[in-house]
Image 1 (cartoon, rainbow, N blue to C red):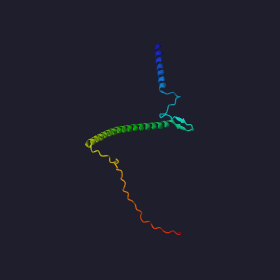
Image 2 (image 1 turned 120 degrees about the vertical axis):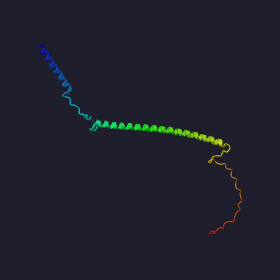
Image 3 (image 1 turned 180 degrees about the vertical axis):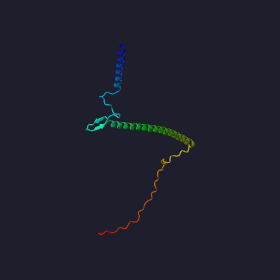
Image 4 (image 1 turned 90 degrees about the vertical axis):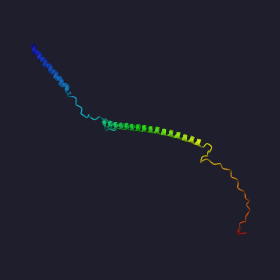
Length: 149
């Protein structure tokens, strides 16, 4: 008899384990499984219209991606502008050095023959007054008689 109680106890224990395993694998009957894509979340607007939030999120994500792309492009153009500025600064420094070298060379070559610049005003001697020639009165023009004389 002891043996029969042991066998029945093992069978009951196995059936409890089987039932619990089945309940654990299967979802409860009251919960509806969610669709694979998910239901769209709707938003009520002030004017009474209904709008899908997922569409709004998608547009905001697209705007964010465009803004990030613009930021990267602007950063690249800023970097290229800085390198170009540095190159031009180097060229200006080289040209300034060359100009100062040429000016020194010019001063060393001809210090005594300093010519005034081409656009400098030339010294003008005051004009002498032309000789005054006396004007003699010439013949008088004929007068026409007026009526009544």
